[in-house]
Amino acid sequence: MTIRTPSRSIFRPNKVPSQDILRENRRLIQDIDRRGVLRGALSLGALTFLTGCNVSEDDQVQTVLRAVSSWNDKVQSWIFRPDHLAPTFAESQVVKPPRFNAHYGIEDVMPVDGKSWKLELSGLIENKRPWTAEELYALPEQELIIRHICVEGWDYIGQWSGVNLKAFLQRIGADLSAKYIAFHCADDYVESIDMPTALHPQTILATKYAKEPIADPFGFPLRLRTSTKLGFKNPKWIVAMEVTNTFPETFYSKQGFNWFSGI
Amino acid sequence: MRPESTVHTHLRKFHPAPVRIMHWINAVAIFIMIGSGWKIYNDEVIFGWLHFPEWLTIGKWAQHGLQWHFFGMWIFVLNGLAYLIYGFATGRFRRNLVPIRWSELVATIKESLRLHLAHDDLTKYNAVQKILYIGVMCVGVLTVLSGLAIWKPVQFSELAALFGSFQTARLIHFLCMTAIVLFVVVHVTLALLVPRTLVAMITGGPTIDDATPPEPAAETLQNARSAP
Image 1 (cartoon, chains in turn green, blue):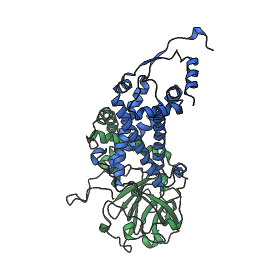
Image 2 (cartoon, one colour):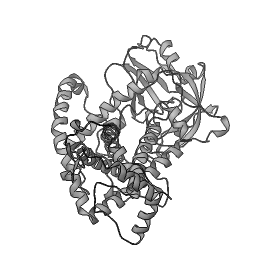
Image 3 (cartoon, helix red, strand yellow):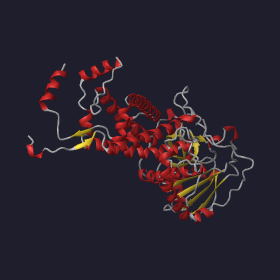
Image 4 (cartoon, rainbow over the protein chains, first blue to last red):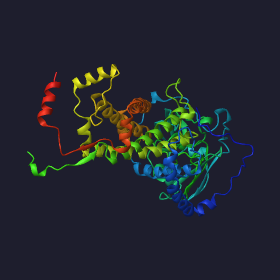
């Protein structure tokens, strides 16, 4: 079962309003959030006794639940062990092909043309020259046979290879003291991860699955694979990468999924 | 040997206020965890024949179920820890949950089968009650541990390894939920059959005088009688 999200409406504008105003007023928004927690907490106790009454969409309840989710982001960053390796597996356990998942069906995947494709770089990076697939595929590879765990509850073992993200960040002169890395994808998907996860030894920009170039539905020509996050934190069909200190909201965090989503 | 002069009456309720507060906080936490857990389960079922009715679940979509679950976990874990520490530190567990005697257990089961439940004294748990209360606490701890193994199979990989594979941990977490649901069904049914027990968890129940421990002689006698 895929994560059920509303299909893209034809009435939805292609360009979303600028998020800059949110960024500039982050402090004010957080202050409002804090007051909301107190207000919400009072009504929450009473609300939970109302069985069968769906309160999850209620704005005040969402405010509380999202505040707790942000707190859980912090807790997860404290729990995170930067050098602790995820279990790895034997080649014989690898599932081929990997399991597909997106917020749309596999038949709606729009393949990326590897010849014209480029990886754009932006933000706190010294050398922002775009990379072609050929250049990226020529970089030293690291192979990971790791468990992919979906937020829904299923899992499979996959064999991914590609350049180590930390090595790539060093190569392009990224500011490794920045807080976040954001990924923009060919299907308008946006995902972001924290810097400690980006620097984890088992985080790669994957170009191959089971020693073959990744097939179209699974992210050709470039996707992220990290052993320490849920599946949806591993964006496919990456077209741009940004190193930033401004928190980048993501496709799923906007919908209420936990942002850090570490495993 | 206790000198006569230090004996003073110390009256307290059978369910002191902290126990009552923690009990009802736990009731709310269990309600949140099970309702939201069913929502999460429905998104990727373990058994094809089992989907929980949507109206019984908490949260509109999966993400809301997850939000509730990872909110409720703090209430359940912090309150549960406080309860365990309180139970051990004050001697409540030692006083109420042990010893469990075989003869008593057999007798209670026989009586229950004859649909005769003795409950003249609310302050004395029978052997079945003791086993159920200890059992559900152990299940609660296992629920948290298997939950942690599912939530953080990499950061807590040592713990996760104890549960075998990721899906085994999920199954154990599910079975723990099942055990808790069964406990709640029995617990609530019995509380409704003997409403005094329900009232006691609100008002505190009978007053007990800590200063008059049971006569040692009587206890020895009872031990001798109940010995096989």
